[in-house]
Amino acid sequence: MMSDANSIIPLIAIIAAAAASGLIGVFALTRRMTLAADVISHVALPGLGLAVLFNINPLIGGAAALILGALLVWALERRTRIATETIIGVVFAASLAIGSLLINSNEELLDALFGDFSGLTLLEAAIGIIAGLAIILLTIFFKEKFTLAFISPDLAKTSGLKVDRLNLAFLLMFVITVILGLKFLGVLLMGALIIVPAAASRNLARSFNGDLLIASLLSLFSVLAGFLIAERYGLEIGPTIIAVASLIFFVSVFFKKQN
Amino acid sequence: MENSILSVKNLGVSFGDQTIFKNLNFEVKRGETTAIIGPNGAGKTVLFRALIGSISYQGEINWAEDAKIGYVPQRLDLERQLSLNLGDFLRLKVNILGLHKTVIKEVLNLVHLPAAKIKNQLSYLSSGELQRALIAFALIGAPNILLFDEPTAGVDVSGEEQIYQTLHHLQDLHKLTLIFISHDLNLVYRYADKVICLNRAMFCFGTPKETFTHPILEKLYGSRIMHHLHQDDE
Image (tube, rainbow over all chains, first blue to last red; front, side, top):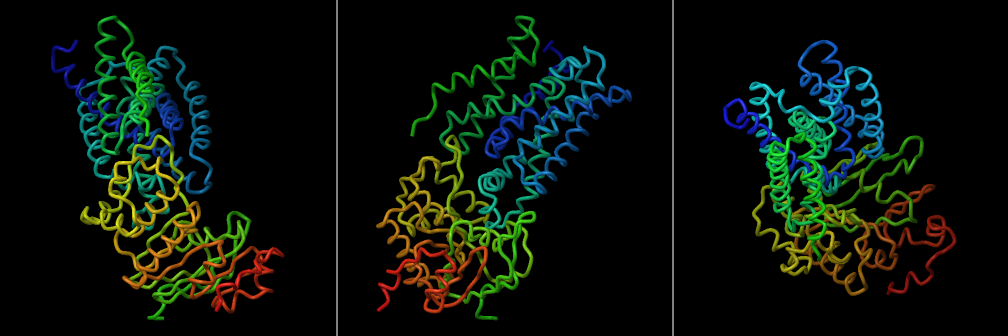
């Protein structure tokens, strides 16, 4: 399977997605959207459902729904000041219900939820590589601004930052990262690939840059190890990746830094 | 107006249908020390957040064109597992403002935090150390006005004295304007040129002598008035 260009390019796309999700996860944790990160990806479901219904590429439907979801969450956060988690919880419940109603074949629903690696086309993979690299570079470029805006919007304001815009930029980068993994991990597991490696990294890292590096490496390792194990034992790829990531998290608890 | 760094007219803030305060009018002159006093829940921190533009408000807030604000919040609500260490935290602002990293050593010196603390996790600093870290953060970029929310909350008495000495030193050195929120009326009486008193029902603005009168304080805090207040008044 990994012998020709047709599988190497998707593999590069997946490596880019893994590194991006590790980085984005560090900021998602700083922004305290641990649960939200997991469920925001479900917003893709109604989009996937509609795409299937109208016979267009499901990725386009999922991406459109996620970007709309990010805009909605951003607008709601600004207006109501309810914690993001609550808002996303409500949006999520609605999405899951509508999405499941729209996707009426069980097999398609399973693919949407847990991913289907075999379906990735070369074009999708190429776009994925470009978007993944863009997310990685933007995250590194904005790392100080995001961090300050998320730990203290007031300090960010007095340091001359536009906190609202940074929030919007981050939510959009977050859902683009989800889109990157949509096809091979599915909506249920992509949120996990963003959060779990970053959570493990928190137990280990003693500095900000260390955190970013460890989170992306753990994410990469989970994806690659998950791939190899799934290939070897004929398992589903997505769940195997997340199982590896979760195992790393449990091991990291024993190495928790003491201060 | 050229002597004033901040002028506030008919300022009001409400959350939903709840009015926090309204019709505040005051002016802050360059180099002055202004204290904001009032009971808990009076909206003192809300006033600060309006001044820095973090929340929406009615009325006018006019900062002088060259006003550069440093803000010291009462606390940072940090998660224990945050990977940021003290150096990372200060570097955030240094990098955002595009300053040289030697600034970090300078501001740590100003607040008497040993450089060895740089590698300490921010969430593991003591409350006194965190407060000094926040002051150091505010001082990055050489502000000409400092907003301090309860500068001595969570600091012991010797730490408190040190913070005020530091502030005075900075004021002399850089002609800093200082606005601070405090519960310690003795400190306010000693250090402030002007006092803003604030609670849900009232607002006053004047020198400590004008504002620290029996009727005003009674109206501000209810009946529990500190009678020993003027002990430092020679």
